Image (cartoon, rainbow, N blue to C red; front, top):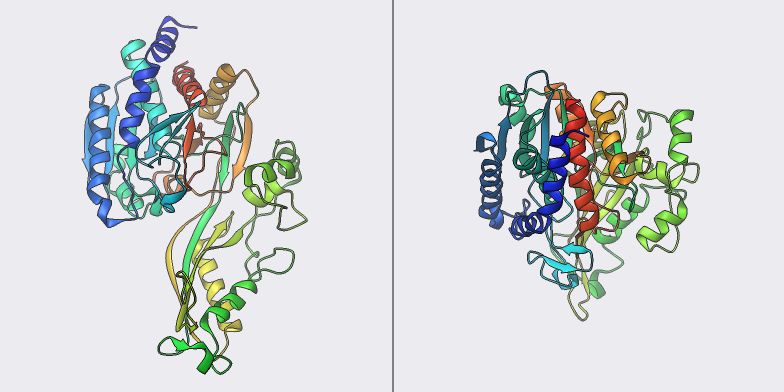
Length: 458
């Protein structure tokens, strides 16, 4: 081990309490990208990161506006004969509803046991800070960065990164790199270091169903007018068959089948039926019976109801026949599906199955294409060695069910692949109340990232 590497690792161990204090400062900013009332908080989080990058000695630090929320850019170049790494992250977070389920206020970081609780601790301010603290350890402890780095930290990931493709097109000169390090993927489980090689895409819609001109008395008009809530429920129920297969016309036509080798590799992961029952608390699993659970969540497309709204939902009773109903529907896509194609498939399904006694419309909110990466690159080898050095365990290679739009955008716009890792755990309550990060794992992640950058240089 080189003297510089050891010095950086020692620096990280010695400054762990201050690292945690900085993480608490960042997650205390309520940078919720979905709500206009938090626009100033988004800006404040961006400026906080820009100031932090300047303190780390990064150069050309900018908070660059987009059509919606700004991108934080920084760079540290000039290391000869070394690769250039584009470091991606996002500083926006999900809404906190339902607030009454939080055990502590979502933007007042709370340390309970080995976990830090607050919105954004795991997704993904904690992951961004792990990279920043690895960089700090190398700059201030190890004598400097062994590779060239560029930072692209966005504030729109939780709303589908709508401004990012145009930003990358416009700022190609700033983003030219050999590959992207993206720590937004997480780990399969505690003490299971993970590299993710495939992500599902996303297509998100609202379906609106309309019936009478206004809400009606259910006693006077029930049985005469088709209830929009019932009509919508019937349409949604018909989108799956009894075994969980999606019934939209042509939905599976372009789904890339799994090879025998990949099926066998996924079957070896410690993610069997018992794993998912433990993670979810569900009484039983559901879905396509001919596929393993790990395949259903990573390699197969899905259609899920994310929300329903209709009629009277307050306390007590009100006998109303609602005039309209709405459902939010998301589809997770796999290679080689596209959001545009499944949009048309959804429209064809409704045209074929919607009854004549209602009106309906579909609103496409946002989408992202799936991504799959190679595992034989120098960057993946450097990360694998780093993770195995810190955890002293073999790395697991996984497909995950979530969507990170920037991965496909980087491939399409800049022509670079991403190395996906992260140090969040399955029980971190992402997008839910009581989000947390496991601090011993977070500190290990900082150590692993230090090794990763030195491995790249070597």
